[in-house]
Image 1 (tube, rainbow, N blue to C red):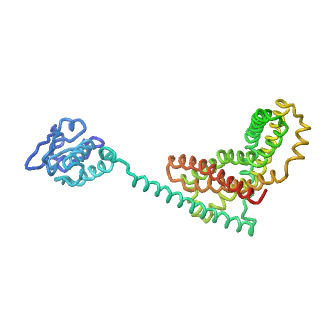
Image 2: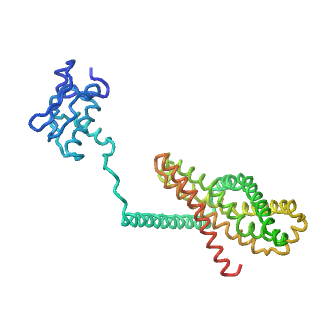
Image 3: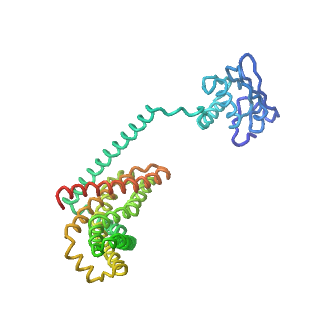
Length: 382
């Protein structure tokens, strides 16, 4: 009986049951193998194959994967890693087993790593730049598809999946309120405490109200909220769509004539666009409340004085600047999260890698967009 995992040769039927040990010898420039080339016999075979130019296995009556590995390894050692040594006398099943083992052999040792030169570094930088430019082009193209789908939905409102939109609004907005409010409250406390320490040196403690108001309303409130949403909801978008992509649900949608942009992307992007300004408003209020409480404790600025100073010295444009940024930040987070999700392949490794990429890229692009807004508003005097 042939053992499992072994490939019988053409002579096995005739010599079945014979206890023939494996042998290896050099004859006329050939490595001649004979007997049972199995896992328990290959360890006794000849290891020095120097001078051999071919491998003859015509006399091998039985061979398993260990024997095939020995043949492939010997073939590599004969020619210093080049697979141009012929294997003689192999039948079809033996040849197939040898090819399977060869394809699954570990990479060959290439020796010490070559020293990286300046040209290599420049080449690597160029490749990374080209890859970044390609991703930017793909993102712009994806943004165009989403905008086109959004325009089509405005013309045909019945295409809007209201149930999905409300669900994502709850996930993105309502469920994120606790973490956003707590984060902003603590940021307001920190601003008031640190500001009071510095301003007390100049007898200008009252200006801590202006510091908190401008910082929270104009920059920190919406920026930190967008960063939290990018890490919380952007990653969730990538993971959810990526899981559907792994299970081929996205391909199934296309097969039955459904557009994944309409079904998966638009509800998520619209939910972010609608809810991020609301979260930004809650963040501003929580930050001001935290700053007011710390100002009262640290500086003795009562809530009434804080409110009066806030109303009289804070321009409404500081609040509007933050609200203007919110939809753009939401679009960035939604587009990147969905785009990375649709790039997921069929393995879990790509899902984890692209989810991480989604968070990092979203936060980076949000900060870049905030810097651009700051420069533009400064140039137009707002």
